[in-house]
Image (cartoon, rainbow, N blue to C red; front, side, top):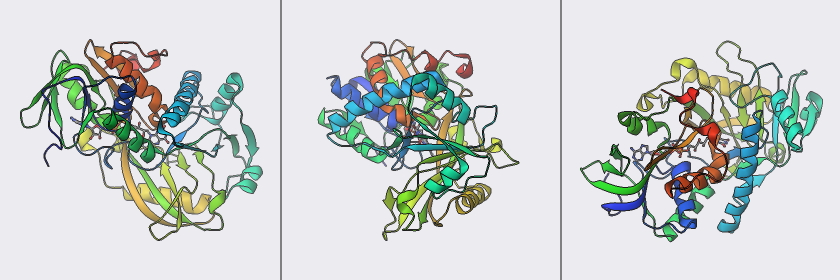
Length: 396
Ligand SMILES: Cc1cc2nc3c(=O)[nH]c(=O)nc-3n(C[C@H](O)[C@H](O)[C@H](O)COP(=O)(O)OP(=O)(O)OC[C@H]3O[C@@H](n4cnc5c(N)ncnc54)[C@H](O)[C@@H]3O)c2cc1C
């Protein structure tokens, strides 16, 4: 497949990668009036092998980390502006239930006690529920010692609609979004990129937004943050039509037991199968250590049988009314050891977003705005030092 669109020889800004980060940056640059922007995507925009594919992502302020909680509040403010620009709702607010065991440890998504503490401190509204209140309200089967927190103002970002909105915004501003156009290298000074086939684009600024593949372009410059690739399993399941309106958006915290990492999540019914059956999306929120890799192209893309068995077992045993698994997908997390992102300027002409883990989509308008400011030779509007590329957790 060859590049779609004519490849220019120079641009004010070159963005590498057409997922959440690259496209949100392109849309933010459009709104800032920056023209002459080229986005280069190796495959297709938000494709199924990368991290931004699918119809939904959770948004929440229910974080155990007070800094992420505040940044999520800022992102929600920007989502409201984004929805005004789009002239459409890009999120569904139906609440989010954290439920499960409480133990003295943070998981990659936080913890029930930690989130409660931070929501108390920051005045975020929530309901505390016990196991019988959870099972009375939702088609879930919590164990007797489970507790829950329900954040009513959380919900789902309609990620596929958001992607379409950013693409439209960028194209209307005259940005070139070029698919099937892999970048093979970045100039040593960050001032341009080389493409497969020998073309070169000189750029005022380059933004690297290549998800798990960012390492491959940054390593030759000695600028790759230390990140792992985690293969993550998710699926759609059909559910009993009578129970369909009652499924919550949920995240279940349980301690690791043997090869069961214990962390599972799911969405309400937000879509149907082609033949009209209501379906929920659910997934596993851990990757076995032996499947985590440093080399992005070494990630397994076939769903491992044991993970499928664990996900099916949870869905069929811990929820009521789940009928059949109808679609199974593996998507990568780009993970820093502190489960936080990298958004930073690497050199005067080069900026990056990477390490989005399972959490970055909810921050998308903040990520896009911050990358656009860096590419406009400004600073992000809020303090993002927790996402620095020089912090110990990501320093190679
Ligand atoms: C299963 C799953 C569930 C998630 N759930 C949530 C959630 O509920 N809430 C939440 O907030 N976040 C969630 N996330 C996280 C969020 O979706 C990701 O962090 C985010 O989508 C990452 O976007 P990205 O643009 O960094 O990477 P990607 O979407 O992977 O995009 C990178 C793009 O760069 C392209 N590329 C790579 N190399 C090159 C090259 N050399 N030249 C040109 N193009 C290149 C790739 O083809 C790809 O299209 C989830 C992620 C996954 C995988």
